[in-house]
Image 1 (tube, rainbow, N blue to C red):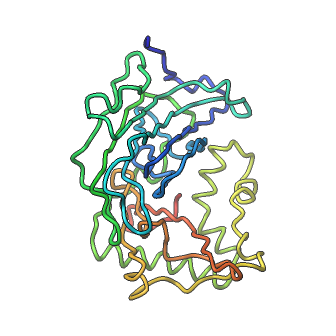
Image 2 (spheres, rainbow, N blue to C red):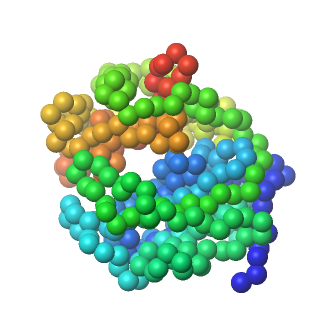
Image 3 (cartoon, rainbow, N blue to C red):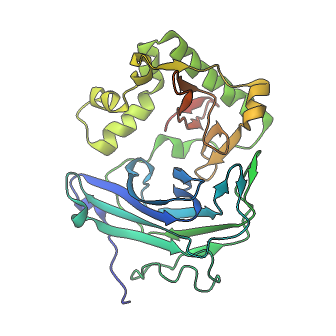
Length: 311
């Protein structure tokens, strides 16, 4: 296959939209951009879908990566790779409102984990002037208290330096977060403050809390004002539902039962409390079905040492 040219200066677009097309079969995988998770699959299946990632794009070099692991059967990982397992991800840009046929390639990775390391990623697209994907078989296994995946590969690839119309994100200037008991305790308290807002159904407090998130969404979706961003976020969805109820705040013995832990990502700049299934301390329950609706929170630590809900 001949080399292809990848887009680098996306500032030529009036309103660029960045997405990642993901595809996998017979595998478990977590997809990340700049070490920020945006899609997780622990159980075997076959999926081909496109995920918006504009809020995770940064000025300069961006890194697309996949943590690949054997899928779960019940609560345990299978022992070895499925012989037909594969996973790939492609980072694209296109003008807002344009069709998928008009997307331009930024970078691409593809891996067949059952193959030998020399050829496992050989089908990744050759891109002119861009380094080949890096395979890491030695990184610490993807692990949470209830699950440890001993079969694991991390595949990553850097883009060319990219110019975007977006500013440097606020969390990029935050402090490096360490995995300490103190950070877990203080972050859990930040979750508790969010929980109280949901208990009281205080819309003003909820909008104040989610303001940074709304500001980011206003920028990347090219909204005219914050009201459009709040409308897209649909902050009151669970409050308005007659079928949902707020579950008890998850802490103490219950958090140990569910396997909650401090999870640090974005190269140490963002954190959340969650378990291996994605559960966080705040969730809603559908009363009749008794299934959970899991709320996603990511925080950074500002210069004053305060946790800020940002993503």
